[in-house]
Length: 563
Image (cartoon, rainbow, N blue to C red; front, side, top):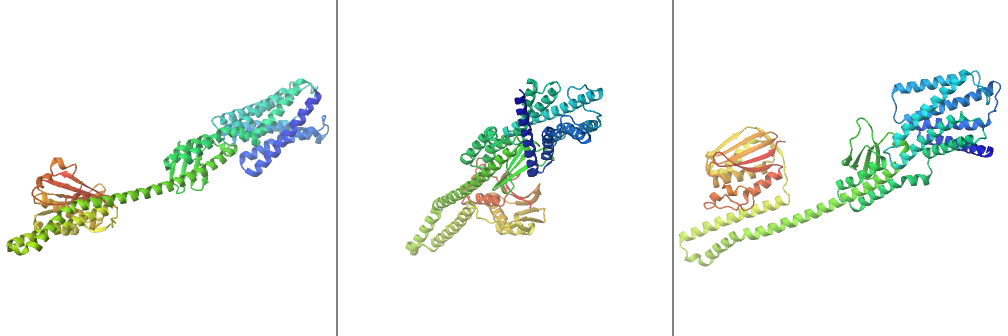
């Protein structure tokens, strides 16, 4: 039995010495507050188990007694230092901090003020008995606080971090049990003494697993997170084809891997691709940058210390997110180019079809008149020749207008119209446009123009208003009212005639190509392209052209952004 006790005693000494070395190495590497407190914790227990083996069993004299009191003080400090480590991540109230510090300070003073520490078999004085009670209370309360705090903090955390925190919680509780049980042991060679040494050794091993678990243990604990990473990576590389889909597929894995309360994925331009949860106010996130993407993670305060494995997984995932976003960007560029080519092909096809269909009538008419003049001109009377020439001129003008409108449509369909906004004197520009369009009907136009200046492309507005005024006199009746005002954030230009208006059955198709006002179809000619072109120009200017039933006739309203 004695040999077994000694073996576990030596093993405990080795384990806690290794713990002290590992804790110091971590502090040198990390240089943060939590690592500092943990280094002090295990240095204190390491000194205790090593110096304690070298100290005399029956100290006499000043220095041996001082060494004995220092050993006891190291026992006093151990739970306090461990408590400070556990509260470095999530500080408790100031009141609790003051109580714990005062309790520890009083016990420290009491340790060095003790007149005598009884040896084994020696009776205890009331003062020493009271000291032991306070000592055990101090150790037990702080160890319970540490164990509960670390165990609760591990709930909901990723596998590696949770297991590390639980190992520390188990170790703190186990060491407390061993210490309390020591008070009831009368013989160092008993089964109870052996069990205490075993518990102390297991506690030290648990501390080591929580502080620096070996690679094999980490791999075992990390398996669930590794599976999430592999699943997320597979989906990123095979299924995600849009920015939104990249975020939707990867952000649950990020949240699960690091136990995040909130997470944000950004592309290389700083634009948010996906978000999860609500970031805590005033709390800075952990930022993981990779080529093409950045991950912002709001995790628990324990994550930077315990979650270094998970953070490495997230860094790997960030790299894959960057690759996936880059692939999506290339896919979108290819898709945009393909759609542009398809659109260009559609525009060309439509233009050819329109040209072939609409040009046939005037070209056939012109060809007929030319053939008549060429072959039968000498048989025609002067009056007939004049009539044929007039008809030829009319069809030629119609053909020229149709060609110009078809070219306008092709440019608008191909988004090849350049909008050049500039500051314009509204009244002078519109009056000139309307007079040019109205010609002989100039006196029958009524103007109501409120703003003096506005910002728009005068060439585009000229094309639209000319079309509306021409239609007003062609399909409607004078007088024609042209009014301009500002409504909300828009410049509004209205052209209203005094005619019969648009037939109700044509209102929905009014802006479609080759649609003409049904009430006037029998008495006027036109291509049916004017309103389609006017609306296309309005939309190219980020505006809109719409039809409203006016008080007297047809009213067309042009809305343009007022900027």
